[in-house]
Image (cartoon, rainbow, N blue to C red):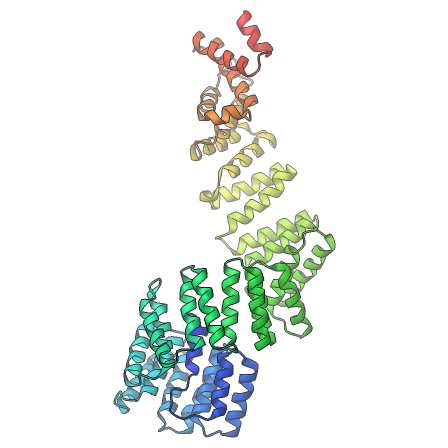
Length: 537
């Protein structure tokens, strides 16, 4: 379960009576209206600096939106307001936990439980919440505290939901226990949209679009103002390529929560669904509002490249400028290999081959998992240009460093580079030999190894017929479908002529086999002069 979903539950109060304004702030947070919620929390702590609850939940808010240092500050403040307040004690220990001192925090949690004799459900709930949502999670411990909390307070809907989230995070594909806790929550509040959304997510998790979509609709009907129901529904539709439905849901989400942060999530969702042309208008709105980060810059130049069906060179120039802006503003350690890959593709569309190759090499250098893919991209460029020396250089690197990534095409092009470039037939023979061994069903391997051996044998006196085994292997590798297709006609004739000559003129004379080979030639080309001359003789 991700941090966002776990933390939303941390915002429920779990106490009998709370100020209405704090409930409002928490409600806005649940609805992902973070800008408004932040203002509410700020007003609350300013208006009542002695409130432990205000500071505690302001800390939870900061943790939810990823501002850990500010969260720790608020929890420390909550702990200092009243050293005897049990929620304040939990807050102080929580600050330690999020700071990384989990051992001391754990000891303090145990002391608080002892002081309350394990009978305070709010304490147990908030300790469990810490273990469930902290930077270092301990879901088993979180589960224990949360189970104790709901045992003491069977009406604590927030604890039930968080317990369900914790169980789901632990169970993998089995959501039975989590569903039980969500049902416990629904028994308290049957129309809880946030619980119904969680049940929808379970169906989504097992790729059941129909039931997931039905549950999201149910959540929207239960609470039309619960914004996450529309966002989650939109992302479900993106996942299942229902793009029009996804955009409809996002638009409804934005009506409830039209902030830059919400629009950023919208753009990210569209981008993740490869809806590049729909992503661009959202990025444009964000830019005009002054909202920009490394991810919006990345999405912009990727999308400008992808959203260009007309292959307009001016659009590629625009993408290049956006990419250059990305690289100028982003720290080098934040750059990923695909960033270089896209710059390479843009340069390729603009006809700048050297820069394209430079970018692919940069991509390969920082991502060993994809390095062979990028080297293959470079090899494709050199293959098209018939730049054999550079092609040999790339494939040598690839074969030495990533031998398991050498597929049939790579070996084939590598061998041909030696054959047509430096005309190093011995190396070509070696590479094509690897191809034939590694991919025995690919007829091109033995055929081109045979051709390489013909060249190696061209000045031999007497002729050594080095290619005989390879031409035999080539013919044996052809399926009846291959032969019937006609694709290999010229190659079959070449191999049959060579073998016909072999069985006539080599020390391994065999008239029957020679006749068979020359007959094969005539079957494919009745007018072949050599075959007709053989039979006349």
